[in-house]
Length: 426
Ligand code: MEV
Image (cartoon, rainbow, N blue to C red):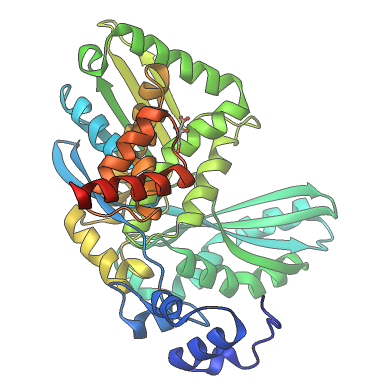
């Protein structure tokens, strides 16, 4: 157990020194310290500058989803995540989508919202009018912060002002609408929001507190759609099952959370692989799903006249190619190269298509054989490996556990002992 978590001056230490302190403060063995210290493909100096108090790295498996055709172009899609079956499911869904031409995807452009909260405003409605009357000045002040973005066609484009009635009385919220181009945009938008705040105070006579981007990026939407051939997906009964599954999610937030989680399996895995802020993606997705006041699916599913399945996805997708880990993390850079996307909106479109594919794959499995067979196959291999199986023993132990319907660590240990003995004597 850790005696004290007050590691004085930890942040000032070199990485090696931090590891020494950490080892002393915990029960880590030398081997475990080496594991924690391993940064994988990320140079130590880069890691040390990305976040604070760095001691090492944490590596996820990186898989490549195959078969994706989006807007007529083929993509090999990198996915970083810990969950078995997701990459296989995406690849399989993309293969079925190809039968009818693959995915179509569009986007609304990279517009983000920066919010400036003004309280203690004597006359909120008047303040609103006054702010709107000074829109040009406010946008200029915002754009002065980022001449580079402006020169590339981006920058603050519009101002929205609303009066909220809140727990603490009325407050005025000024919103900068910013085209963030190929950046995710949090830095650009937050800088602009902070820069215009004094002017907002002066115009309104109120007091500004928060100046921050909104992750409900509902002006940065991506849409993806695909037709899934009924024969290729397993027959009209499965089509019906998927349409019923969608109706279930639409009617019930408990199911809908899981439905949308399945979409995020794909979106977040590509986001992780490409160095995106996946917390922002999750926040955007779920707040958009609840925007009507009821939590709704991010996809819709219906049967067309031919009996084929038609899926559509619409969700915020705040991703960038310049700035952040997309630029600094060498694996993210390599993954973006594998994907071959040239702009942030193209990356958003790919991620939308992967989200739709992932949702299709999950619903298809759920509406037919269920997901556990595929899951258990991979899970049993993981259990076998953690119980010490290596080489061909991994599959042998995994298969026996599936046959016996006992996918458990203790059984895996017994099987490893039993089967490796058999191998030695045999
Ligand atoms: C598991 O990670 C995702 C699913 O639960 C999604 C769904 O139920 O739609 C299979």
